[in-house]
Image (cartoon, rainbow, N blue to C red; front, side):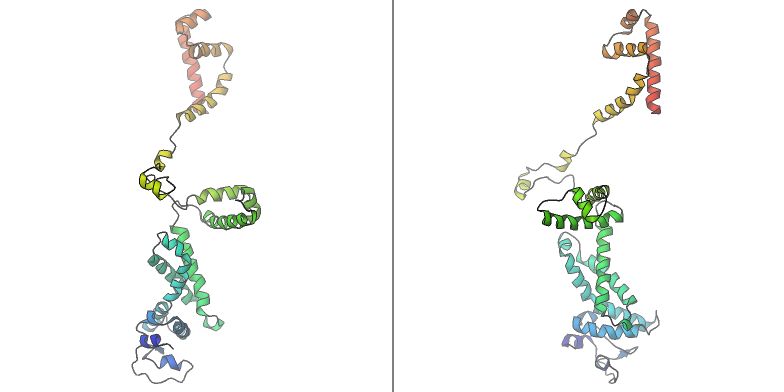
Length: 305
């Protein structure tokens, strides 16, 4: 055992042990048959692996909720914090992008605790072999559930990762960005699913409307970049007009010839009611009543459409 581990274990004059774990046990006063470790985080990784097996074996024999059980479990967690730091290094880019390392340590600790609770010494598997997938899984779940700017279903979150890997692979193989059809064939998905995944991927990150669209720091510093808010589209009133005309067209075709003629003279030729009456040989009052009836019928037809 290293000097660091020796320093971390408090020597309190325990009697030597003749068991296979005699060396670590002899270093300090036993608590439930375990060495008393005061600064578990200072134990070197190599020594932590050796001590962890001793603590894991004993943990299975202790009654949950007792002082001895809590000591063994908490010491295991503290001794293996280095595994969390090792796993977190895989996500350096995301840490540099604003994710706090402390958050990853807390999340990774959940995975470490799960590994401790589920480890079976009888299977003769190294603890680190079991713990790392649990730790990494919790960190990935944290990114999946908390780092999306817009909430999307888990299916699409997982699809985003597959799409990114596929695009990178196909781009390298083809020499250009793959099409939706090529991605769909590679992943054995429908083109609709691929398009849905690509659209959902846009919700992973967001930018403020006050941010600039300048592509270089120099342009941004000069204020030459346009604000994103200036490029956001507004409601187009012509769209509402188009929808109204699209609904009105079949209703107009259902009118008889005289009603269509009255509407054409009034709204296309912009004739007055008196001029329409003179053209049709009827009074202005009759034209007014006819127009009111026609327009009411069209309005009711559009509301019911």
